Length: 100
Image 1 (cartoon, rainbow, N blue to C red):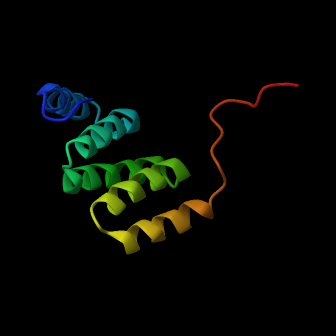
Image 2: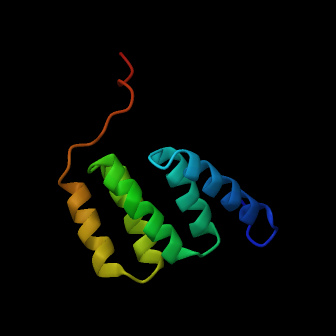
């Protein structure tokens, strides 16, 4: 989404509405997080994605996504801690690898 063209702000409004209707939907909240990051609304993005991490119970991708938000917000120590935590977890496989 392009910054400053109004579409990103509209996307935030729609995603916030979706999140109100489905407050435990990690996919909606992650989309909201990414849209907020695109608008440099990093504090809101971090707060939102902290909830995603709570919902997803230690999924490495959720931790690394929050870490990127922290890095962009200058919260380097917190980002490194999250990445170290993510590195210690088993990867989550969402679909089986292709058969040879």
